[in-house]
Amino acid sequence: MVGAVLPGRPGNLTTEQEAKLQELWTATLKVFGVAAPEDPDAKQPLSSSATPDKTAKKKKHSMFRRHKDDDDEGASTDQEDKYGLSKAFQQVIATQNPEDLRKAFWSMVKHDHPDGLLLRFLRARKWDVHNALVMLIATMNWRMKEMHVDDDIMKNGEAKAAADCTSSNSAAKKEGEDFLTQMRLGKSFLHGTDKEGRPMCFVRVRLHRQGEQSETSLERYTVYTIETARLLLARHVDTADYAPVKFMIKCFEANYPESLGVVLVHKSPWIFQSIWNIIKGWLDPVVASKIHFTKNLEELEHFIEKSHIIKELGGDDPFEYHYEEPRTGENDKMSDQSTIQRLLTERADVVKEYEKTTQEWIADSVKRTELQKQRNDLADRLRSGYWQLDPCIRARSLYDRTGLIKEGGVIQYYGRSETPNGPRPLIASPQNGPVPSEPRADDVD
View 1 (cartoon, helix red, strand yellow):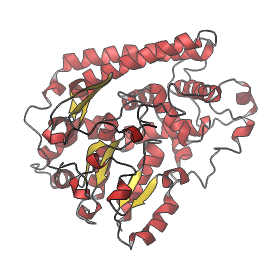
View 2 (cartoon, helix red, strand yellow):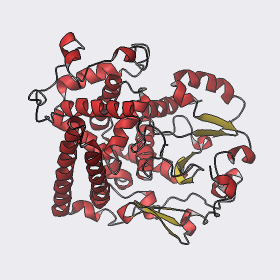
View 3 (cartoon, one colour):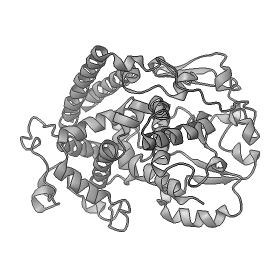
View 4 (tube, helix red, strand yellow):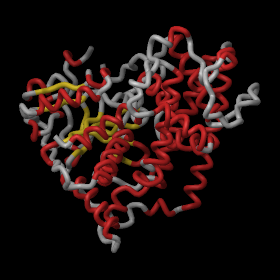
């Protein structure tokens, strides 16, 4: 049912799951160099040669500690670590500044609940704390050093691509043109929600031609789309050319865990069945189980209301994709350095308070409920503070220009404005499609 908190999410944890979350927070803060009051060793950089030795096992929340029953459930092997996350983790610990990793983490949090982000990694690694930490730190490095998600892709966005199209540098011009070509085609686009209230991303595979765009621009476009989709998520909501397919799989399995709700492959040609047998072998079984094949409108309606299915696929939603070019002055707030610094300082103060309260929540079992409430209040402040900061650090996107993402984090679907505190009254919005019909009795679980 839409609005229900699923198991393993903030607000719906078992005692065992909460203990795992606390253990992961302890390990994560240690990696970030955030010392607990009673732990004078926490500020020391972690050694890349650290192993789960006997000494480590004696510590209540050792980063490398394993429980006996963890060895059989969720423990990774070299064969399972197909993306080399363990090796990446060791390299990161040995070479990266803890404060840089900390900044990368809080940058990824954005408007999310910090617990929610850590829980995605725990669920993806079947509640194995060590494996979740390895995945988390490898992801921070990937965002910070490999893809430059926040300091380039999202910061510069479509406006930079448009500027690069006129560059005298042929390589930059090619990348800009390739990126905007995909935006203009609508090779993929975000629009509407499914029956579970999850944002939908339509991928029009027929528009992809191998070799037409560079691999770099394809990857940049993919990350840009996924990151933009993250901005649409309300709390507790889950989301023959093999190269881009492999990259998307790696993104969702290794860098955006537990962010994929369901994949619908609609009216796939018969030849895709043989391709699917190859692709399926690349997938984690949990991810593979989220992929469904639909042949007609009736099968699509198992997942999406007919009023939310675009006419292109036989539904009633008249939405048609049109790309709106970047506008002059739309990113002016990114030049207001005094405001940016003020908002960053305010956010940093809330982050420190959240980290401190988290350490108290872990250590004090008597006041745990009270401290959890404080943590949730601080998470709300981080969320609202992010949306004040957002126009100063993220270039405006198509979805800002068309009114899907509104000021203050208001998300407008089908004329309905979703605020951090719930839905606003329905209003007309031709760009975002028709107002949905009222829920039917048989829609309610």
